[in-house]
Length: 85
Image (cartoon, rainbow, N blue to C red; front, side, top):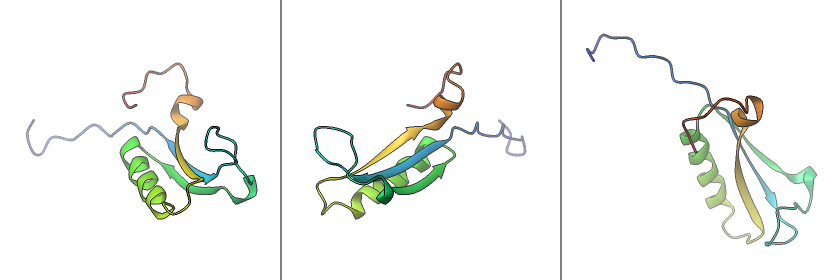
């Protein structure tokens, strides 16, 4: 592809990164929903993963703290096959 060719814009695949302290490490039930850490909403998996990794590393001293990536684009439009995991 020539250097001056326009790239097709990357498809927006929204991902939510959030975390909180779990009641029990064997479940995904949070100790206090009022204290959930909403890291943010990201336009693709790669940027969400970077944010997740940073948040998880900052909370490494708390064994009950867990962060998650939610594939919001799959919830918003479940009929569309996504290219990411």
